Length: 106
Image 1: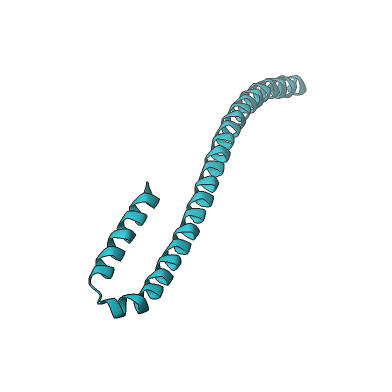
Image 2: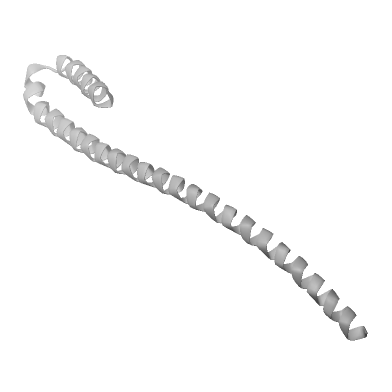
C-alpha cells in the first residue's frame, strides 16, 4: 500500500513536471528526472528493508518478553514457596530453641 502511494505520487509529480517543460528542456531534464526516480526508488527499497528488519526485531523482542514473563511468574511462585518453607522452618526452629532453652534452665 505504501509502495503504491509512492509510485502514484511519483508518477503524478513526474507528469506535472514533464508537461510544464518545453521540448528542448524535456530531453535534457528527462535523465535528471530518471536519476531522481531511481534514487527515490533506492531510498524506498532501503526504507522497506529497514522496516522489515525492525518489524522482525519487534516480533522477536515481543516473543522474548512473553517468555520472560512466564519465567518471572514461575520464579515468583518458587520464591513464594521458598518463603513459606522458610517461615515454617523458622517456627520449628524457634519452638525447638525455646524447648532447648527451657531444658537448659532446669
